[in-house]
Length: 75
Length: 151
Image 1 (tube, each protein chain N blue to C red):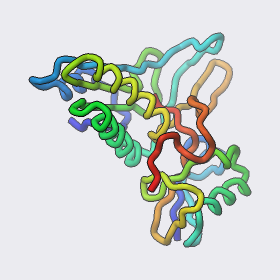
Image 2: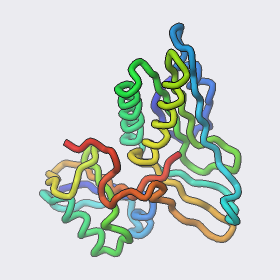
Image 3: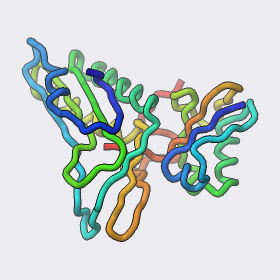
């Protein structure tokens, strides 16, 4: 399984802070899953696998933790 | 003191100043980002920050490494506060030091711009007429954090 962490507007729209999905999956497929579940602006989300940014073609394996990262706004 | 820290405690800017000082430093720049009340006609009541803390702290450390690559010898310490912040409270402190002032100024500006690109921290505005998660302060391209080195 892959653990997916959600933050900010994504966590609010899904009403969850985390969920699990079967492995393996590409980030593109995780992105589509979020879009299908009604997350707004899914095409603009960034993703980190085990705390490192990765892009759509990256394959996430069992045991990995994926963070769904909306556009950041620190500072 | 941890040089790269994200948590809910009030910030102590002078602690970062002390951290980056040493005998061969001739310039320290201290940037403090504070909570502003008025943005045009919009009135902020408070700000709420959320973070993916372990990754955010790693990214702050990465920014310090990038600074050292661009301005060799420059030191950077960064603390960002999260949780609910009132008007006038400090949200972020960046201390940069170098032998001469130009490097410390430039390094400090670089660090705050990079925070707005790659550090997983999100701000929620609580205005007098509603709330909103803020994103896209730099109008980046979709799906790819600007300037992030991807292997």
